[in-house]
Image (cartoon, rainbow, N blue to C red; front, side, top):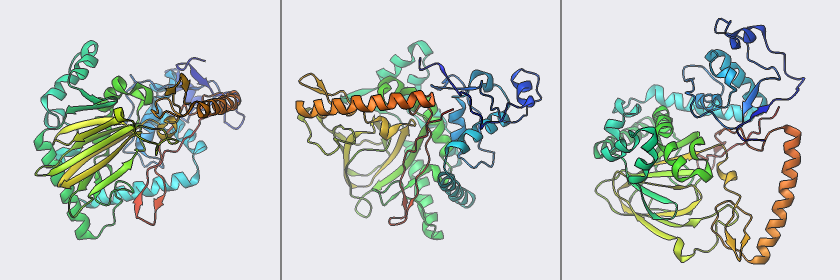
Length: 432
C-alpha cells in the first residue's frame, strides 16, 4: 500500500451510520453543522496533508488539548477538510475518545486546568512576546532565508547553516533585544511564582530551575514557530526522523549558574529534533558536549573519536540536532537557554531502527544509531528483527493500518517524588 493512500476504516458494526446532516454537508447542501461522520466509507490519511491549514480549536472547552485537534485535522480525508469546524471537531473527538484511556484524558484535563490557572492570574511583562513576530524576534539573515520563494527557499535556508559536526547545525537566530525581553519575562514569572508560592512544574526531571513557556501562555507562539520555521528546517536536515511531519513541541527556558543548575549530565532528549538557543549575557563558560547518536539500546556505549564535538554558546545563536544525539551541558555562570523539543508522534520509538554497519552487517537497532557492535551480535539482532517484522505484518493485516501511522502526544503523569512533569510519548494506532 502506498503511504499516501488513505486508510480504509473497514466494516465496524460498533460505529453508527453516517447522519443525514453530515451527508448534506459533505455534499455541499448542509447548513454548516451536523453530527460527527462515522460511515465506513470515510478514511483517514496515512500521511498528513501539509498544505492544509488546520482550524484553531483554542476557544472550545475541549477534553483534549486543542493542538491535538489541529494536528489530527491534517489526517482527515479530503471530503472532510472543508466541512464546518464543529463537524470536524465531533468526528475527531469520537476517534480520540475511542482510542484514549480515561487516565490519559484525566491527566490532560488536569494539565490544562493547571495552565489555565497560571494564565488567569499571571500578568505578562511583555505582551508582544506571546504572538510570533519575525521582524522583532529573528535576526535579518534568518528572516531573509525563509522569505525566499518556494523554489529557492531550501537552498536559502542551507546558506545560513553551519555543520560543525555530522548532524549538528548552528545558525544565528534571535535578536539581542528579544533575548533580553524573554529573560526578563521568565524572571518576572519566577518572581510571581515566588510571591504567590505557586508550585510550578519544572521543564524536566533533570533541571531544577527554569520554566515551561507553554505553561504561562506562549503555547500558540511556539506552535507558530514550529509550523512556519522549525518544521521546514527539519524537512531539509532531519527527514529520517520526522521531517515536515513534526507536530508537537515542548518549549522551555533553563537556567544555569552558581545558585542554579551547574551542569546537565550526558543524556538523550525525548524528542525527534531539539533546538537550543543561548539567551544568556554576562556569562562565562557554557558548552554543550556531543558524543554521537544512539538508540535506546546503545545509549551508554563508548564514544568514537569522530563523534566528539564541543559547542560553545553564543547569545542568540541556535544549535539544532536529533533528539537521540547524546549530549551534556557544563556551565559556569549566567547561562540561560531556550529549548524546543520538537516531536512527531513517534519520537523515542521511531528512534529504534538502525542501519549502522560493521563488516557490512546492519546493526538492526535503529535507522541512524552510530554504535558498531560485533558481527555475532549483528547476526543475532538481524534474526530477531526479521521475526518482529513478521509479527508486525500479521498485526497490520488485522487492523488495516501501518503501525503508528496516526499518533499524538499526551503528557505523562505527575512525578510526585520530584514535583515535576515527565514528558512521555503515548502511541495510538488508530484502527478501523
